[in-house]
Image (cartoon, rainbow, N blue to C red; front, top):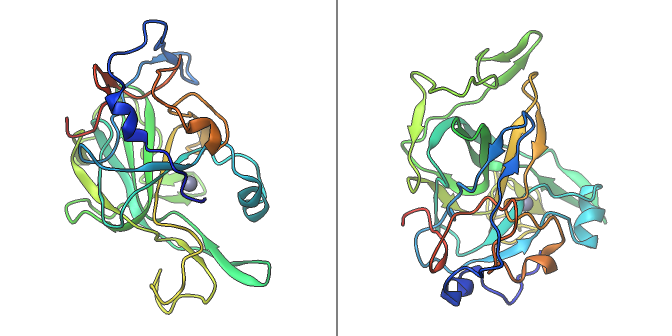
Length: 259
Ligand SMILES: [Zn+2]
């Protein structure tokens, strides 16, 4: 997860869309089209980088024991505000703590840490924002639990594409948390959850996921929001829109959530 010397936002200067560039709809598990709807989840002008792509690097594959990351990692300064990438409802948000495993003689922890998950009823997909330094104060703690019959609350992962009465509505661009490295460490186990005393094995970053859930509530389909599905090297040039890409663009390039 080394920081690579390219900036996503350098490409904002690229200008108009390439006429050959095609932004097409993505097809959901239900067969419905998902058109681009995501804005970059940072304040306008934030300098950040993609540090891990859809497919893990060789070292990350060894650590995680599987090939696919199924998300995109963005690196920026600690405490960079994280903004909702689209309108929706906060459907889960809590502190997922790691169960340490051993890697090359060191205990490593890998969990989402403090995270926020948002349901986007219009598109029928979820976005998830992991490893936050902290969650915004007005985001409620919601921790769905699996039961013999499904989930508690029962409707939590069986949305019908409608509003969720009583749930926390969120607007695109709303601050949901701040960038950090929670849920991750490599070395001395932290004294408390994600204490800085436990040196992080990973850099500060946002783990960003887009996915759907099966009728039983489990994640079943993940979307690469850039429609690249490669290793981080393949994300060095995201200036041109790809077919099935889920990011919104304007005449200047990728759209920030607070634009
Ligand atoms: Zn990640």
